[in-house]
Length: 341
Image (cartoon, rainbow, N blue to C red):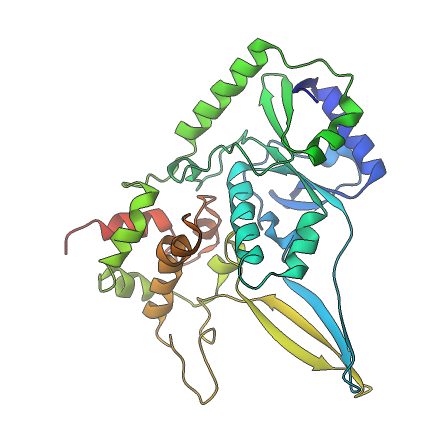
């Protein structure tokens, strides 16, 4: 399947056909902002969105999910989601986050629940058309991506360049097999879009290369920025909840009213919450706000990179927008660590 060129009507017709055939989830307007939701008609799809309120990780690791059912006889069964779906219109930075999550949930203790959803998903990436107020993906090398998608869409003037990336993507594009191939001019304009996004998606400018963050943090454990900024922290965990690379969760077993059966669930958790590092016996390994605040940035810039070789911040800027105390901006924090104290 070659790279295709579609006009607006052709794109909407393709999306409409997909909606009639399967579950399609895409960005839609919601109260003046945008959210990924199931599409019922192509007209609701907003590929010009700036950023969604929650990242698309919610469709692979739901905020709360049932993991298994058990009974008093010791019997149990896993609950796995096997419903296929298309996630349409994912920005490159969110695609980079999903790729990180794929590695983290597959390595070590293989997570069958996450991976079942992931294997049943088709990812349609869409290059950014509108920069959000706090995006800094250009600083994190996630303004564009060359892999991780099944299909990639780029708006070039009044048309769209549609490129398959995998066999699943080629299958999805079968319905537009008759569309014209993308011409040289369209492909050149796509390159211009990518170059433009690498330069413009920098609403906050990081003053060092992302690859230098682990070494910077190695020598910054006692930097005063942690105490200074944590004084304003509410420990609300909003930055954790909106982050596309945060994946910590809590697991609990609940017995049903019949006292003979029950269910195990897991739900999102966050290292900024006061009780996150509390253990039996009343001890809390990070009881102080400054310790929790510092841990969040060390996880992004040092601990996860030590595991997978990638910085666990993709520059989406959601944490900046969600933090009412105005202390969550990673760029401000990492830049402050460069200051001599």
